[in-house]
Image 1 (cartoon, rainbow, N blue to C red):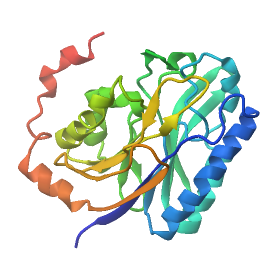
Image 2 (cartoon, one colour):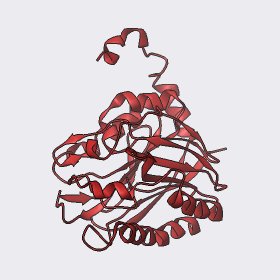
Image 3 (cartoon, helix red, strand yellow):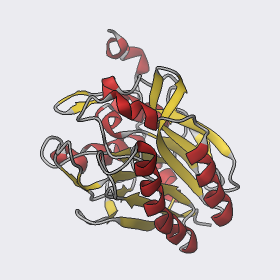
Image 4 (tube, rainbow, N blue to C red):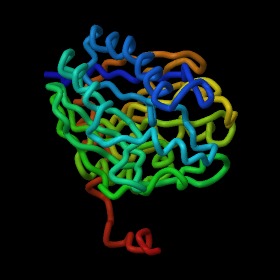
Length: 288
């Protein structure tokens, strides 16, 4: 019997930005803007929903204003608890990317994973932190320290990779070896710098590791930083590297797709990449 999954991705522009109110007001406006889309996903029967990178705020990393430290919160914490209510209401797994405060001065770019019964399963912390070309993330985030966990949700084994992580095949492979069936990559990426990689790297990860991916990018321009245009085009890709559902470039959107997890076994039975690995020959990869 096919293992059909209905999954959703939400790409979103910001309703308020720096200068449009307090950080608390900016976060609340972004949450309120998301809620109708989350409700729509629930009504459509979406089983696994993923939001965009640090979804409650603008992408503030083009600046280096420590005022944004105040937008970080505990995980689990207030925002995760609100999302738990929707997860339980709709029996929907929700991946919640958020700015995490572990303690004073220890901050992470994190995604919480909530199961379909509303229970908190755990979190992934972004491992690879950029510091270049306007993406000054080391000012805001410590590198992740939780490895590449897989979350056994009610519907599938789920992994998370966040934005800049996608440039590193090693973590993508670790997620596959750890048992991921679907890997979600919530992102914030602008036209120009890495757009040509957007539909190249993640299909390559899906093929190399024989899993599905859901890839989310935000939408629009965000003042006052003017880093560039977040070009949306969130998508789902299958283990053969086919993009089978793609969102628009320029509008807020809930992208919903149905797919069969049995394709994973079919593809891995043909391409025996895990069988034919030679880890004993890869020592140089982990050298400093």
